[in-house]
Length: 387
Image (cartoon, rainbow, N blue to C red; front, side, top):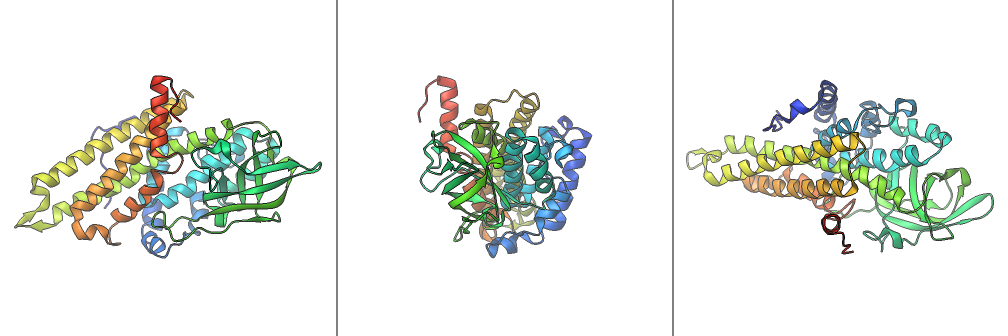
């Protein structure tokens, strides 16, 4: 039975509501995700049937007001949900993170009331799936150089371009797409599945996030109704604010993967015997486990503190970058060390460690690469931009 570490009694910092939410999501992951996720990952397929279930447990837009189909919870609750989902698989957390932070959030924050009422309830329930279009084939860390454009044609906009590495793209019903207008200003548009010229080819042959639906967003003279423009934001501020929310969710989410790896390794080390005794009795295995639980504790405190700052609307983008960078790197290190404890069994689909490790190789790059987040911290402490 899964027994996540809480060495510094971080649970005491959570409210009873947070714990109830965590239990509900944890129970759902045990019931609906764990029995099937390895098979879906092996088959390179996303378990689409889980989308509606995630809507039912409040995993989409938990901090969006109830008026729009959300649950109206705080940022700690959002983080707790992301942790439990990623314990199941990064693909499951990614689907919820994109739906919440990159689709529902910009519609709520930058859209008008009509847009909120039209899209948010269906996204919250899982009736609709959303995608977020910012990254392009030749423009990842430098989104300001994007080539996707739209023109004003009088009674509509005409959108052309493409986006790449888009979570949920092959299954999305709507996409929040960032493109440049005729003056070169970045704006947000809501694109709907049935719009002519909009296609979403799937990206396959991935070694990582194999249970995630990844693809492209391709726009070939797509007519966008003018009422689909997110009129309350201009420039890169819009997508970057979305990414702040997503990066925050990642900082919490990867703890689920790390905890699952640690818990698996600890239990295995106590059961596996070599030289007549459990391998947990050997110094080098204890060193690995001690360092893992120490690192998880630091991850927990970092995520909790930035969550409190977000609740107070005081968390800076640089603080969020630090949490994302540190926690993903730490989770990947824990996955690798856990694999070592299991030896050859660590690469088997009978255990989750290698699946988590491969997933984290993507997480350390997406929503801002590890290096870019490092340079964001460097710029914050020196005042000098290195990119």
